[in-house]
Image (tube, rainbow, N blue to C red):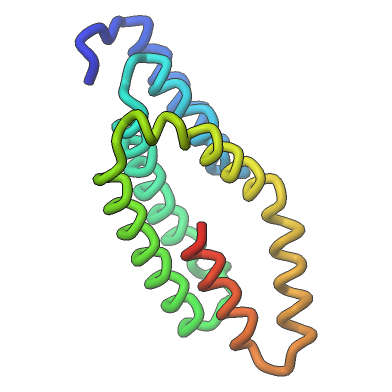
Length: 153
């Protein structure tokens, strides 16, 4: 936590978190608001990233619990994707631990661009994957594509 955290910064962080939480509840993408705000208030990019992802993890668990009955995905596939997410998150965390602050700052624009593109094109990608799943006789290739894409991201 920066020593120069003022009342204005605290109110800004609180209001941004409220807006981002509302945005995440409806459509996602709240990180595009909270992450820059954390950096603006003087928090280092690596700490801001960790803070942001911790908040997202908690929100994702709450959403998964609330919407678990609406997920029309076989239990086996869900388990595979969850394990893949945990492995990818673990690998990403380890990489971040060994990345210097300067390197992370240099990578940040490209990471944000990648996140923006993924967020923008997630619906067409989902439709394409559903089409591929219907087109193929077995579900394994589309699940394999999902697992590889998940680890790549």
